[in-house]
Length: 148
Image (cartoon, rainbow, N blue to C red; front, side, top):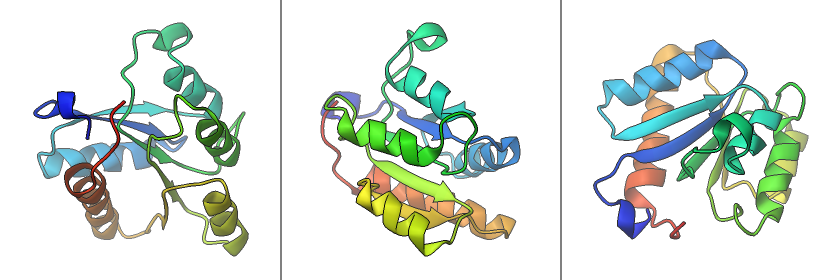
């Protein structure tokens, strides 16, 4: 976590085209009373605009963590991940791939593109909430993140 942000809410960018999954993540974070701001965008084009603070996202906060689905419209998650990790201003933001794909080639490709971790979305609601809590606890409470 950025030392200047201690005590401030954590900024999370969720790149997800399924509104149900976004709602589940919001509910899980709220249920555990975790201090964060969850921003959600529906595709890779919006994700990159948010990260580069372009257009409607000109005042967007830099995320401390990105939750990225792979199967997105317009620009898929693999393309987004490649752009993030090749950009010197963005590459240090941890990217957690949170997707329904269990395909070995997707897992390998995500790690080849320098994803920080790969999690397959569970179909069970309670397990989904448990995973979101674990992501938040690990990445935002335990791990020491580089300053922005």
